[in-house]
Image (tube, rainbow, N blue to C red; front, side, top):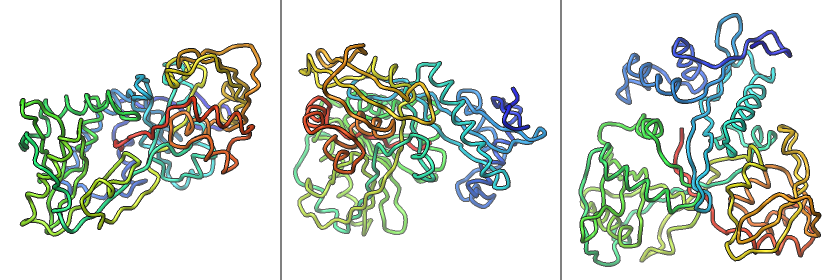
Length: 403
């Protein structure tokens, strides 16, 4: 179709656009031939690897006289939100050639993509932002953190014996895939990785990346870690465990490398410091915002969303501002029974005025109502803030994927 606000053509990309899609990505993110070779990719391999993206993701592009100048991709995925499974869109491959910047192309592609997400029932969108202010201006807000940690003494990780054992396995091990699915089912914010997500997970890993799985005494897989060792340093890309036994088992496995490594560096996506759980807190931890999200359609979002199960007979009126998506830019009154909310035409004495971004970070648990009120992100009475804090589940999202 033709965009009436400009002379550019906006349409869905197909396999025939693979070369232009790749070129725009490589230019925008400065992926050079040397970078590809360093990671073991030949040009034709990276080209073929993007075929599944264009086949399975919804990629919109803006064209100028047949040349791709801007693009916006949506990966269909599922996400655990307080034990309810939500179909979502993971936004990626957002890129525009610099000579076409500041023309509103990305905004138009984003709005059309969100409109199509709404039609498909994907009520949440998430992304890794290259500019927090840019996305915040369009209704997105921070919903998760990435913490990195460094220790120079692996002995602080091993606190007690465990009955199980660790085995190194291939990256396509069925135990690994099944483990992550079990973890996602019990972890708020976690994404269920489909084949496309697993392909992206491994895309830039070097050949010496290793997967180790902790098995319990009954040989059931209970946890895994993905890591590599380089220049006397162990880099832990991800560590997942279903219980404390698996966590301790993986820590002991790291400790078994004490003669090989002088330092261990890892990532933590839980939003909670790991120092408290160690025998010695001599650890360096840093934290930074990681994933931003936005509710695409609040009315649809409420149909799956869960409050605390014991909350009943409570109603709220949310005066939501969303200048980007008009269907969210209005007031919603909900009544909660048994943790389940329904829209109602009745008025409520508990009213709150907030943006769609603030509503997103509040309902997904990244920030609590009292904190947002202190930051003047919510306009509401003290009684409304306290009741909201009582009704909402307090759990930060765990999101470890980057697409």
